[in-house]
Length: 83
Image 1 (cartoon, rainbow, N blue to C red):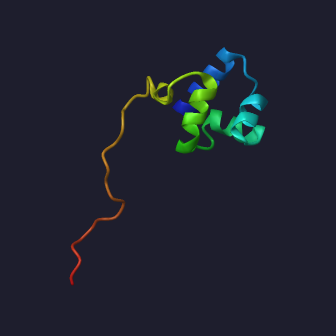
Image 2: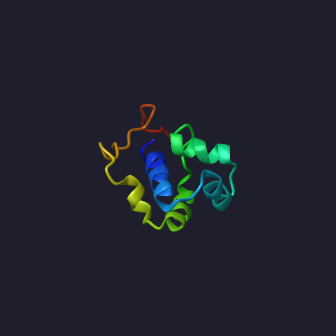
Image 3: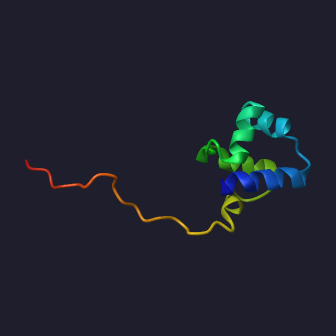
């Protein structure tokens, strides 16, 4: 959601329409809206494209994000394999 809000913030600052953003990304306007509202996550591969389009670095989208990254924990407990 944070990244989506940042995308919308920058898009509005640049005077770019939602349809223009969607067209540049090759997605529907509805999909671009879902990215901005956080309904759908933005694929990592799209971040460099978004950054170039909006005139920011890819890290800019994460500025102000609270909490950082959680450490990796497997979903299920692991146990050693017997050979």
